[in-house]
Length: 190
Image (cartoon, rainbow, N blue to C red):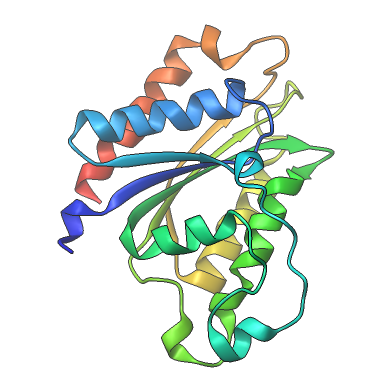
């Protein structure tokens, strides 16, 4: 597959469709699509991604034995150019849905080099929260960025943050929506 044919895959780790996190992830995908990049959007809650069983079967087979929607995402990763990971910050950290997703990437950390996460994948991180401090959860974003880089070699190329989203929904912030769109459009050069 040609590198330019690879997809920009949006993964929303909010259980709420059409809410702040999903809107921003969708805007990033719209920006990417405006430049001719193929996109896909998935809500982890729709896929029913279960937690990791910690059975270690994947360490010898390179396959996760939990049969759920995560298999859809595993099949997409070799075709992925950029992951757009969106999470609301609930109770001072990433959502439970995103944590389950990250734990299920464990299969790419084993000793067999044939079972590694596909190389060259980039990330755009999207985080939303209610607190009015725009830097309140920079440590959580840095944690996520560090895990993606350390374990999977995924370079973060853009971060979209939205604070105070209960009082100022992202749909009412045109400058924020434009930043998300521009981040997606810039992916053509990545």
